View (cartoon, rainbow, N blue to C red):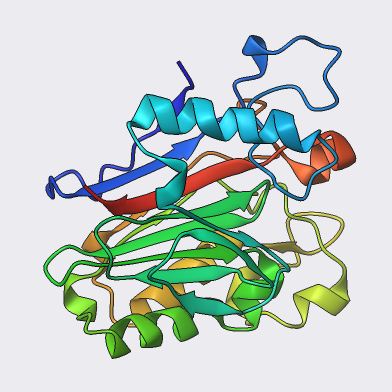
Amino acid sequence: MIDVVIPTVFAGFSHVNAIFTKANRSQFPSGNKIQGFNFGITTNSDLHEVESNYQLLLQQLGLEKENLVLGKQSHGTGIKVVSEAGIYPETDGFITTSKKLYLGIQVADCAAILIADPRNNIAGAFHAGWRGAINGILPKGLAMMKEEGGNNKYFHAFISPCISHKAFEVGEEVAQLFPDEFCDRYSYKKTHIDLTGYIISQLTRGGIPPKNIEVSDSCTFGNSEYFSYRREREKAGRMLALIGFK
């Protein structure tokens, strides 16, 4: 069995299904390029190995490959409203009203944001590293979900494990892009950024009630249960966040 995180924020809605995978390193031999269940379609793992990982996960979840939506992510703000499965180039966010599709986001230190409006049957999934977050992928995504018929007071959101404030050291060229309230210039030798805090602020400013937001407290850099690009570089796989309607 592939070990996954089940967000509790969607627990009250039987028709919403969401998961976030862990690295699951113990199930792989040490000779593999990337130890663990790697779901990164642009990593240096053999593509057949990655496809096999997807097949095992989909089988465990009772899903078909024909239901899966993925992007060749570019740390940008490209978002697509989708009605068909497939791999979309230059895409870091998806929105759907389809009851057959599952939206997937691949991460290793960046945050995956899963959002559902269970009343209006609209789902969104977004890749929010510091570049995507600062360039507004989440405000853009929330606006697009509302254009598709969503209501922000019914939105529920999950912020996945990602790099923590404690581990996210940056240069001043990055720090100056963030509001001062999310920059810690005093506790460490270099400035550290609170990426999760910044994402929460974007979601609440976008109209999501704070009680409808679940935030993982796991740090991908500090916890080997997860992949971390900052810690492992080219040996880092990618976790997968999935959301869809049963």
